[in-house]
Length: 393
Image 1 (cartoon, rainbow, N blue to C red):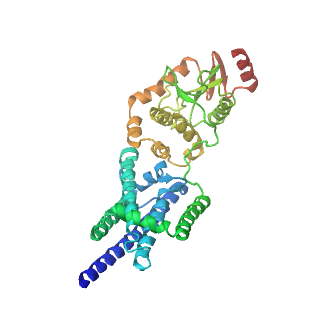
Image 2 (spheres, rainbow, N blue to C red):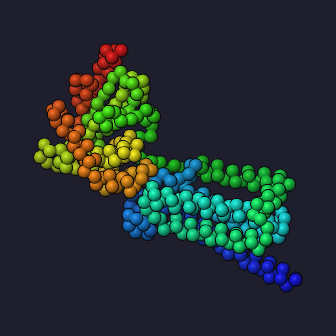
């Protein structure tokens, strides 16, 4: 009988050592994912070894908003999780556990949670981002293996998981000092990390612009500002036009100043031969493409986020090959739907319809603003806004 118990102890120790090895592997993978996340967001020249194709690309996953949770990259939460599980597993080897099965119940709980998180992230990767991250997949495999090892250990104990978890929690509550130190240490570590790690991953866009109501009018044009406006400003704009960027921001701030009175309606007038029939030479050579990207984002209810992102990267476009799909991923759009939309003729036709409407009104430059039948080119004088608001009242 003693030999059987010794054999069980040996098997249990072997399972624990394998568990510790997997935790170490998980930490290595998570650190690499954190490194990829950092460089993808801060170094335009960086190229990850796992950026194999559109469908298999760690960088695509890293730039998505799903790569960050509660103020930290998900990979850093992974490092923390593997550290906690590793420390608990090492504790069980020290023969100073809080009771004979310590901490098997907590490890079972943590491994089930980790496997559930892996399943959720895999689902998001497949359905929202439409790209596979090889290192992420490696972490999912590690989590699955940790869960299997925990199941093996629980079965050898021949006790229900629920009982093991209750035993661990009772043991912690019976030692409030240890419990308090664990909670305080964990909370302090997380708080310090959140405070020390800068938010280098923040989505592109003018993040200082105030939030406003937005929607689509009966003609399908995107608006932001007042739901029942007294004054409607129609903007014809080009995402590669510096004056458009400045003027648009000014009008957005104006709408924020009068949120119940002013509505801004966006329409496209890209000065690009690809969709502007009267241009005879290249000018803003990606303006049509960006206008279509904004409309595709609008189909997912994110027109204004894409609008702001496109204006914010205006300087970058001159020196780098900016991909609207990357912007869409950063903003959390469904990547596959967005890519399909970019190829649809109907979306390009919407942009072409705006260009045609601008030409019918003999609008030549951008930005151009229409308030009723009054045309303002370049900007709208503040005095004119005050006059028009008085008239509207």
